[in-house]
Length: 387
Image (cartoon, rainbow, N blue to C red; front, side):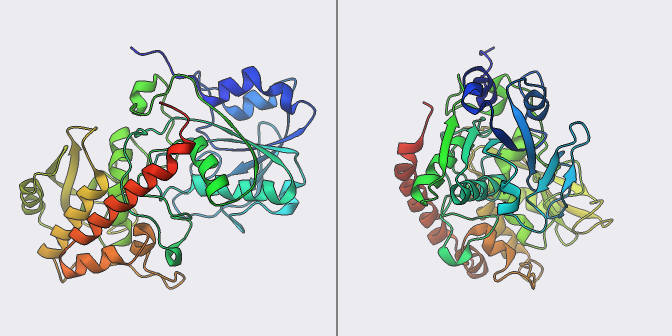
């Protein structure tokens, strides 16, 4: 077995504590902030004789990642330490000046899952903005991209479609670590944060999470496995439709279905596409919450057969095009009155994908994805910190 990757957290505790000694520290984290022995970053900081932990910040899903998607929560007190936990998914997603008064330095330590939709990287960016605004220094303790750093896939977010599931023009699968993204955001989008990225040791770009030798802690309630995360750049698009993405089952983002779908037919039609690195299997399921709660659904589960060649976004664009062809009167794109655009468009980063699905030809969209991915590969090169 390969040697265990050393996290940015461990490197920070070994080499950087003297830089923050005597300063008030704010920690932006959740339950994924832990070392290889599963001791939480909160405990490691709170019990460290030379670290003065004065504030905690929690992103979407909360400090213990037990809040459901989109569920807001308020400030609270951390029971084990008595320290205030400021919610960054409640009244505001951005740290306020009043929150920042409690600290001199911010440390970010949280596991991302490698996809543009996932909100933790934007909470990090908002904290970088707050640090720049209030003159605070920020350390980002780097962690692996669990689906690797060797593949980039997808289109950029158009300017009119920015949201908390796509704040910046980056591809759907960006292939960067949180530390690399922090450097990229800071310079390319001119945040001007006084930023220090603490690198990992021993991580390589072609590694998936099981190869790191580290224990896996789910970053949110529906991040169940590496296969789920590798599917997520594609399956998350399902959230913007009236198809179930498997929330309320034991296989969220691995299965897709609805009451109007014939699972056996969809399985055969998808497998006939000969999509690389994946096979479809017919399934039946009954969600316990979210879409079609308590209703019998049929659909497919996607089984990854070759991780290195599997392209999740390309795969699900093809599957959605197939479903649109098979069920043109049944497939719907969800509208939310509070949103400027349909949720599907915010996830896709534009209206082009929805329009091409309605028109039955996704080739132009997929070509644009390739152009944007190639462009991003060039832009990100200066910010890559690992081989």
